Length: 139
Image (cartoon, rainbow, N blue to C red):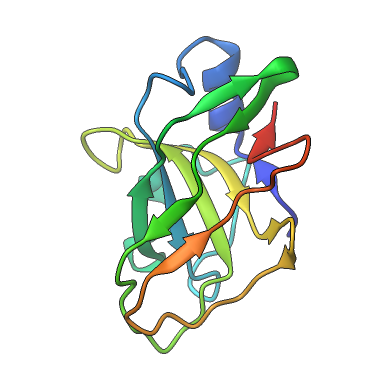
């Protein structure tokens, strides 16, 4: 699978239901061994097994550049729990009071350095977003 937008996320942006700079947006590390991405049908985090979401952090200093380019500070996931599985993707989602109202926006399994796979070991994990023209993503 390549990076892609969840339909639910695109609908939020199209209907002004999500303000990238103002709303609480989080990133979660995903174990794709226990989650199969479905950009069409997964409309809330309730559709994504909790056990597949290894760690999450709020994105800070979010901004929108010209032509719908989304950016934020690089993300630090502190003390990611040591697990036997690897983490192969990042889920960007609109936060809410529960998984039933948290909306998946974007699935990322390729960063500017290529496809990634990490083995969490209890230490911090750092995501450096692309500093090129498309940053985190482009609408």
